[in-house]
Image (cartoon, rainbow, N blue to C red; front, side, top):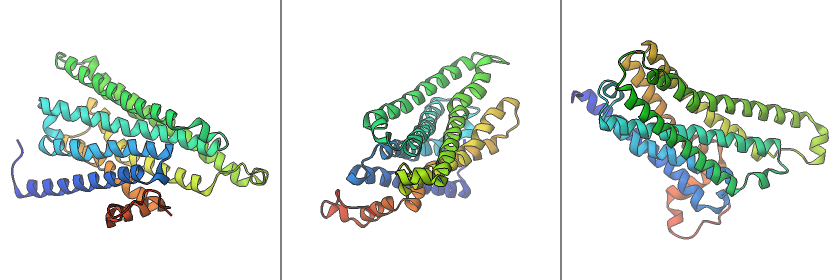
Length: 296
């Protein structure tokens, strides 16, 4: 049971404020893409999926984590802890699987620009989104089943090893390796196109907008790695007892904060999102229809 000290109250206020900022920021992204027709693109629908996952982290996982901190859940695996962990797994894995889909989208946009609009369409993106959420739910179910089996084990339980190593590998490390490989391919192709005068003359080149979108989404992935990699390393090191409870809980909060960063990255690097955010926050969209406005 947590002590209701002044420090705990201040911490809850601080975390509650972060949760509100996280929810409002991602809600801005969702409203912007849904409302403004200029933002109705397959790439942005993937961003909506990412924003929905981040929004749910702010309004579901954060409150659960405040009332049932990770340190207590490591020792007392009650119903609330299992629910919190299930939501955490589904939403965090949806984020990384969606980022993996975004990297595929960027690969086609940069490396195959002539066929991009026909190969990456609404139908393909819808399948990507459904697969991202579906795979995350499956992983969460496997995690819960593993937890139940682990309760029946005494020591050297295989399910414990699978939980600490197998699930992180398939849910995090493997998708990250795939994304890094794809972005490396994109970088090499973009560099080749920049140096090739013949390709520029023939018109087979990547627009500045596509380059900027790829760079911005690479920054989004970089922020995700910085926030989540320490947590997954700590998650795996629990098997050897190399991480203290306090460090592990700190890494968990640091990982969850990633859901707050993406809207600020979009606002900083995308002029279209900046324009959309300004119009929404100023209340212009409530006065008349701006859905067909040109965002610059």
